[in-house]
Image (cartoon, rainbow, N blue to C red; front, side, top):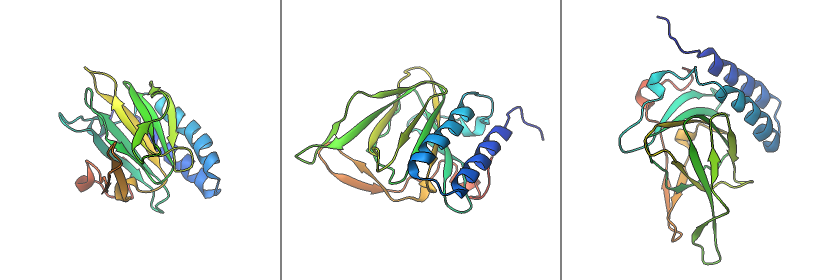
Amino acid sequence: MTTPYDTARLSSFVQQLGRLLDRQPTELEILAQGGSLLGQLVERDDWLPTAYAQPHPQYYQQYLLHADPLGRFSVVSFVWGPGQATPIHDHTVWGLIGMLRGAEESQAFARDASERWVAQGKPRALAPGEVDAVSPRIGDVHRVRNTLADQVSISIHVYGADIGKVQRSVYLEDGTRKPFVSGYSNAAAFLSTQTI
């Protein structure tokens, strides 16, 4: 069965990122060079199948697109209904966020002297084709939201692990920490070594 989507673009990205990681680059090199590769992937919105772009009326969706067989990285589509947002959370590994469709905003957070989580600087707005990065070294705690009140937004995230299996944390502004493992919205239908 043929598809109107150019899924070869995702396959090419996965192969190129795998070759980059084969060279055992530093994290800064991964973020720079991997960010450039992700920018090339999200500069065109013609490759993500509809099944991985479906919003939920209440919750943002996290669809696994590829999990590296060696566990080095995963590629995920985040689908945001109008106005949907994450809580304040961390990742514990490097991550790249590429905006594919719509618009989103990332607000960084850090602990203050009283151990409360407070916003750091202005929110970072992402438009289609733009890429942002997170990691424990450069800033890992943020809150993300779809800035559009009447439209779905989609971003493509790449993490330095199978992020759906990583023990992470959600933080309340009073400093409370809640551990979680995100899983994937399409977990039952996906074999971890496949690419769409």
